[in-house]
Image (tube, rainbow over the protein chains, first blue to last red):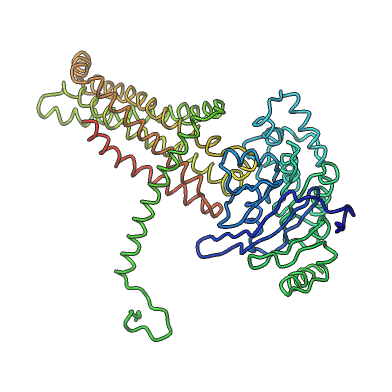
Length: 259
Length: 274
């Protein structure tokens, strides 16, 4: 039976499965037949250069984009043909951390993190305060509930973004370029945050990134996207010795630049 | 010397003539305009469909009523008062030639209620509220806050656009009434205090000529303009792209199209009502 590298447990059922995904914007074909399975409780990193279609692929996973062809299965249900109201139910299984956090500028940290609770539950203010405090604790933040996003650093905003993403206890968390634009210490902190969210909450995570070091640190599986196709996928140890020229060149240039 | 199509050396891309380029630009302007009108109409249909569905976001709705309506009251009062004053001043000068100053009141009243109030009010709301609406939505779009709403299973049209469009639809007619009142008071002040028209004549003649239908015509126009300018601002902001520059361009386009839309619709609504 195949074992995952990090956990050593037997392979689990796919939480998300992408089958034969094609997407074109005008003349530009971004995805040319993507196949990928994200097993329950694992962390999959989609690695690739700028403009390789990573964000487009992630947006398909949560139903923000409809493919030209192909299927996206979330817990076995194909979300491609779903109507907006049905999609909203599927999206409640997800939390998403955006590249620039995408916090609402006009709301305080408490209002941002409690937003999904306010929208989808009947909790009172006290219950919401308690849950928000717990989630902020998980991401290592305290006493900032009344601050506005503009008053926070980039790293803090990302952590508030993660607290908001996990406030409804989702099964899946999507991370869009979580370490882009961060200094090395904050990058390490964000990597630990992803690992901790997985360890403490047992969530399935999908991370899109072009940061090789972070990817190798947090991933159970890495899928390398190039030219609209996943050209290599597997555990980090296997990808280190990959033979595909595009991946070899990507890793080579990254290590050259960062050594 | 510029190279023409005929003279272009083999292997080099041919330059388009100025006339062809001009026609292409005109064609693009036409197709973009048709596309925008279609986009705004489609968005309007979506807004009303989502407005009918629960949850009804009353807090957002009242907040927008406050922003569009209460926030614009002072500027509409000032615009209305000075419009009425200047119109009375010019009318009085003209009517003095025929010794017919008694007609100043009705002239100001009819012009303000039928035309000036809805048009100027809509223009002021476009500049003050719709520009802010468009910029706010555009910024939310380019910073992925709109995507964030969607990923949190909240429909952005229902959450962001419905309150804004309904606020435009309701508050522009209300502000038109405020403009009517201020315009008439401004006209009264200049006619009676400055131009020495008798107060009784001003009031009696205005009552004689001004019908409720004239005020209603202004209110209907106000509602049409309010809906249009709020939809244009929302459409341009909601579909903004390309960072800060894109948001700026979207806001400029929204302002120009709203102002043009007001004048074009003013004619057609006026004709339809008579």
